[in-house]
Every structure is written in structure tokens, then in C-alpha cells.
Amino acid sequence: MAELIIEAESLAYAYPGGVTALDGLDLAVERGRRLAVLGPNGAGKSTLLLHLNGTLKPERGRVRLGGEVMGYSRAELGRWRRRVGLVLQEPDDQLFAATLAEDVAFGPLNLGLSEAEAAARVAEALDALGISHLAERATHMLSFGQKKRAALAGAIAMRPEVLLLDEPAAGLDRGGVTRLLESLAQLSAAGTTLVFTTHDADLAWSFADRVALFDGGRVACQGEAETVLSDRDALGTAGLEPPLLLDLGVRTRDEALSLRRNAAPSRETGD
Image 1: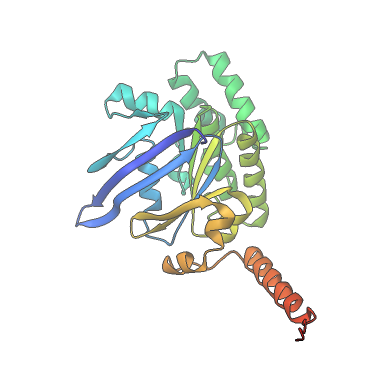
Image 2: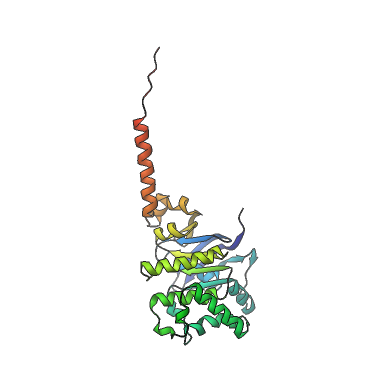
């Protein structure tokens, strides 16, 4: 069995007003995999990510990291967030320093690294995301796509074991999505575990190798991407359609099998 890096056990959480976001949720994330948390808007996907890095504390349940139950003291949270990074859907919620380089350096400096070590991390992260030429640009002068990559650079400069991404493709054009996924693929190849939320089954199919399907604040099913994404009934329950390419492939295969059966010569038997 693959090693589990992070686990959610029976998580329950409701927002003020009694709006239930998580309802006894269980989730297991295997080390080194790409997990898509797939579900409609309002299913609790973003709330889950905020629990997986300790930003929110569950009313019931617990989170394990590397088999260890995580706590919520200041020291424990600091250790937790060094290992589990989070990139929010809206980059403006995450960028606050005057320049891009200063923003990306904030995390490494808070780890206690020297200025030289932090600068090396910044240069590495900006280069990986193709935004080195923007290092001295004011963060408020960046385009939306550049802000997305800037927020990601700040996260990867911390070199987390697990990187959580909330709707990473939201608001990006096709070229921006391609560049972002290329950067994430490089992180994955280097061993970073990726967990990303999306309501886009096609994105889950093209990039994830495992999928957790959300419905009503719980994981309705979890497994290999092809298995989950080809389950029309499970997707339909969550108000989703199968990925277009996968659906076309399945239909083509089924039609070919039907034609083959119909074309097979019948065998007659005599007395």
C-alpha cells in the first residue's frame, strides 16, 4: 500500500449560521500523487484545504500528517505549515509585500534562513515559474495570471512536502493554465504531493492521477482518476458530467465492441 502523507478523519465543520461545510469527512492522500478534489461550488472543497494546513480547526475529527495527529498550538501550526503549503484561489488574498521578490522571500525568511539562503530560494522559485523578469515589479502591477504564479512561487519557496491549491486554473486563459500546469508537473516530478480543488472534470482528467469526489460535505468516492471519472452515476449525484475526452473514449470503445459482436458470424449446430 502507498504511503499516506496526509489524512482527514471524520472532519466536521459549520460556518456561522449553521451552514455545514464538512460533515464527517474522510480523505487519504498518498505521498507523491496528484489528487483532484472534485465537486460543485459549495461542496466544501475550499474548507477542506483550510483544514489540511491548519487554518481552520474542525469541530470534530482530526488531521494526520505523516501519521502524526496535528495540533493547533502556535509551534505546532508553524511546523505544520512548513510541511503543507497553501495557494488560495484569489492571489490578492495572499500577496502583500511591495515587490514580487519581497513577497516570495517572506516565507523563507520566517523559516529563519539567512538573506542569502532566502534569496537563493526566491531565485529558484521565480525561475521555475518563468517570472524571474518580474522580481522587482510591484505586486499590484502584476496581471492576474502573474499574480497566480507569484502566489505559487511564494508557496514553493517554502519547499513543502504537500502543496494545496484552491481552484488553480480559475480566472486563467488557456495559455495561463498550460504554463501553470507545466510548473506544477515539475514540482510533482520532484516529489511534491499535490492536492487541488476544482469543479472542472476535464482538468481533473488531464492532470490528476487520483480523484476524490465531493458531495454534501463528504467524500462520496475516491480512487484512480479513470475509475472515478468514468462513473457517470457518481458524477451525476454531484451534478457533474464525465470529462469530454474520457466520455468520448468510452463511447467509442463501447460502439466498437458492439459492432464487433454484431459482425461475428453465427454458428449453427446440427443434430
